[in-house]
Length: 122
View 1 (cartoon, rainbow, N blue to C red):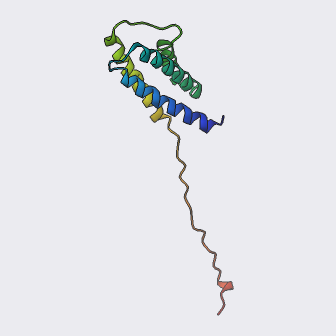
View 2 (view 1 turned 60 degrees about the vertical axis):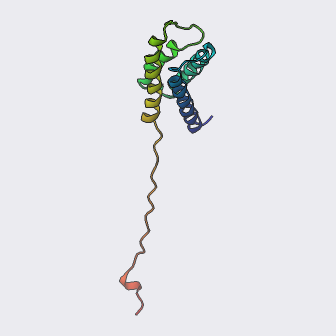
View 3 (view 1 turned 120 degrees about the vertical axis):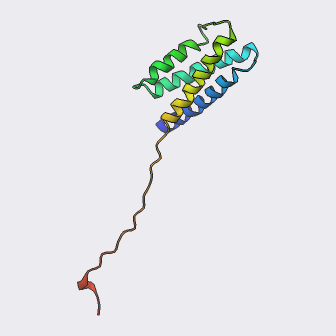
């Protein structure tokens, strides 16, 4: 997989994670939260792999631990999860905005013709 394809995959996954996290504030069945944990933990691991040398690793390592589906952390009250869902969704969006791909601007310069006095025909 090329680097560009991987970065695009991480961006799309991060957008999906943010949408799912914002929707988690609403009332949903229990299965939705299992899906949320799975998708967010996968998204966090992808962001960690993408940003292996930056401070994002620590932030998304905490997210991956908090939302892991294998050994789930239960807070038992939705009121406690709501701020975490919103903050984590914003964290995914901030990572997308800060690490957006840089667009290279191509400047086309018109090549000037060299004119010499000696080449002029009278």
